[in-house]
Length: 221
Image 1 (tube, helix red, strand yellow):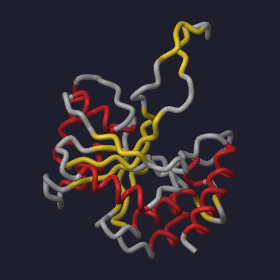
Image 2 (image 1 turned 90 degrees about the horizontal axis):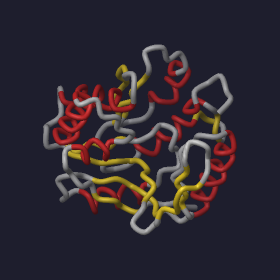
Image 3 (image 1 turned 45 degrees about the vertical axis):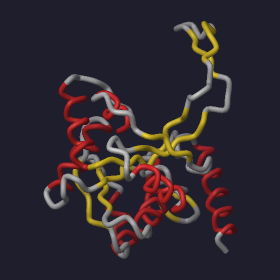
Image 4 (image 1 turned 90 degrees about the vertical axis):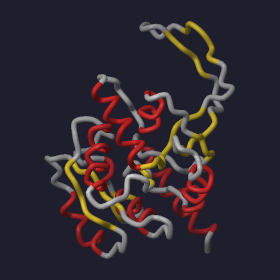
C-alpha cells in the first residue's frame, strides 16, 4: 500500500477499513460472535476501541501468529475453550469490508450440510498465462473450473482445527483455510459470491471499495 499503517486501519468512507468489516459481520443474524486476531506488535487497534465497543457480537481479540494459518489456528483454539467441536466457524479477511449479508447467507445455506465446509469464490474470467522466471509465457492455462478464492470461508470447528494442525506439522504452506482442508483429502464446496467483495491490497482499492459501499447503500435504500 505504501502507507505506514496496515491496510485494515486505513480510512475508508470516514472510518477504518476494519470497522466496516466488523460491522458487517457483527450485524449478521446468523453470526453468534466475532474474534479478531492481532499481531503482538499491533499499536493501531487501540484507536478503534470506541467504535468496536458498541458492536453486540464482538467477543474480543487474541494474539495472532507468524503466518495466516498460525493466526487462524490460535483463534480456533481460543474459540474451542467455549464452543462445541461441531460448531461452525467462519474465517474472514479484515481487509474485505464490502462483504454482503446475502453472500454470507448463501455460503451458510450451500455449505452447512457439507462436512468439508466451503468458501466464497469468483470464476476466473481473464485468460491465465503461466510464465517462467524471466516472465516469458510458457503456456495458457485453461480457465474452465478455475475460481478465485475469497472469504469468508466456513468449516466445522473441529474439522478446520485438525486440518490446520496437520498442515503446519507437515510444513505445508496454506494460504487459505480451504487449502488446509484439501491437504487432508477434503473437498470444500465453492459458493459464488459478488464481485464487490474485494480485498484492500493496492492504494486504488480504497476508492473502489468506497464506490462499492455507496452502491450497496443505494441498493438497500
